[in-house]
Length: 107
Length: 121
Image (cartoon, rainbow over all chains, first blue to last red):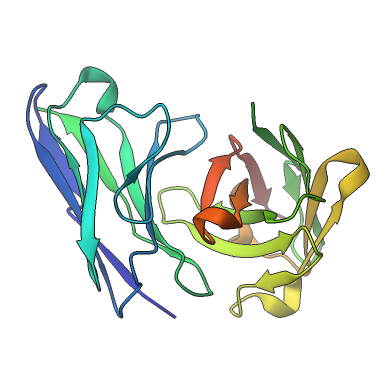
């Protein structure tokens, strides 16, 4: 199984800050990496698919990058509605595996 | 507009079989390239992928639970199902279903809100 190590687990930031969240795979996942946002009581929302493709309707302040085993989600200027939990998913191979999540909190 | 909604028993006892239903709209599981997956998340813990089913009835299971899982679909009624046999307290979790469009790979694009399931005697 491919292990996904996500960091940090918690992130405290202010509106307007630039933040990055990382996922490291235990082996090459060929850019098959998605990023999701989850708010309490809501369905997870896909932000980025296949490393760097912005989901339709998602603001351009969200971006993704990476290759091989290392991937990053960047939020260029935090907005109040961005405070949520973020997680990654590798879909290069079965079993599909998730990062452990990053809770983004208001400083 | 794609929507998915999970339903389940809420609470069940150890050793029983958990039956979950995913009712969806905005797509068809008879369309080439479409799939539905099940994922769960115990409270305060990470996400675990369980199983996928595809438009052609192909199925993939998480090996860690494979012997206990059965995924199926009812294309006519836009539903997908997951059964987990012989549950115990470790199966207490929020269960999600989500759509896969194979054009984008094996990952999920739209998710349901989830249904909480508690296993307790």
